[in-house]
Length: 154
Image 1 (tube, rainbow, N blue to C red):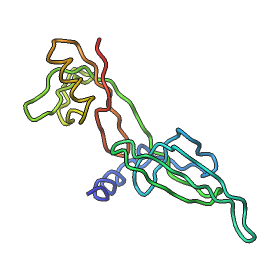
Image 2: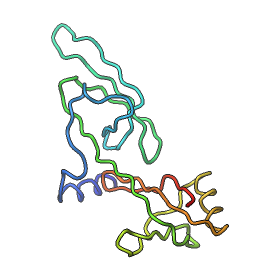
Image 3: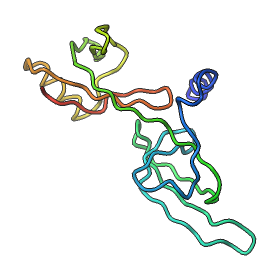
């Protein structure tokens, strides 16, 4: 499914999904694509140049949507893809019975295709909304995927 999503989104404007960056320039807390997943780098280490090769960069990243850990080893002079990651804030209008958020878009229309976050964040978001608080939801988007990640009360 993910490859289908990636292939479909790549047929359009590739520049909006990710851009290339040299392995050696990607540092901790930067974003990188590892095994087709947008990840936040949590650890990097560089090995010395071998007798016949390049210095290698070992990178460990956590998927920004699933939290799963991925690793990659890449010659320091080679390029890796860096995803364009965007954070957008939307005003919460409603939460449906099947846990979809109704969010106010900047143009006044509504966005209703995101589920409430799982776990403690989702529970606190629902509680704040049910208590009549005005809530703003932060949505993370990268590589054609989106997820509600956090919220704040107005």
